[in-house]
Amino acid sequence: MENKQKKSGFAALIGRPNVGKSTLMNQLIGQKIAITSSKPQTTRNRIQTVYTDERGQIIFLDTPGIHKAKNKLGEYMVNVAEHSLNEVDVVLWLVEPTTFIGAGEKHIAEQLKKVKSPVILVINKIDTVKKQEEILTFIAAYKDICEFAEIVPLSALTGKNTDLLTELLFKYLPYGPQFYDEDTVTDQPMRQIAAELIREKALRLLDDEIPHGIAVTIEKMTQRKNGITDIEATIICERDSHKGIIIGKGGSMLKKIGTAARKEIEEMLEGQVNLRLWVKVRKEWRDSELYMKNYGYHPGDVKG
Image (tube, rainbow, N blue to C red):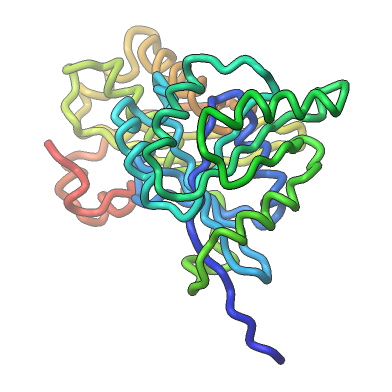
């Protein structure tokens, strides 16, 4: 059997929150999806989605901070995102099918002018365009604001032209070894991201009442046939007095934390979430290596 060299590399995925990045991921990857984050217990790093086939492997980096996202991965993600654009082999910019280029898009275009990697412009949602010749006007509107290696009109929803996009991505990737196994586990990192979102909301809402001595574990994360995701999570604190503060009068604080976290997890998963929270006391958990590992931290990750 001929030993054909495979390609392997990184593609940064950028675009405003409503342009259909997740839909495109699902369409490109299908059942091969494997999501991982580069550090445990943080959403502050780029989320990676891995696509593998006989041609090689594409690792997609989702860098939402570039569009000045108010939440999700924290504001300093803007710097991480802009910095990461120079570390990848190819940049994918997803846009809506329109001739109007707003301030958000112009901001992205300015960043892309500094990028040395090839940039592929993806005009998504062409299934919503009535006359196909209109697509030419969208291409014309965008083509001069930045230097693109390729422009691909496609529909992430119907799958039209998504094969062409994968083909073009492989065209720009270097030859090299695969970074991930083909069967990389999918749900674990999503659990870590959900846990970190809950922890972030708890710390923000509790203000200075509780120092950094809380952790969050996800006990259960399952998806129903109707698409709703059920999540059961436990907030771990170090003292009984902390437990009372986290729960709040009549459960009011826990409800606030749950509502704020659920909204953001729904945004991340792009679907409805049913979130249930509990609070447990584990005295001195931050001094126990066993507990630390159990809660997704590695010694050295926790400050304070």
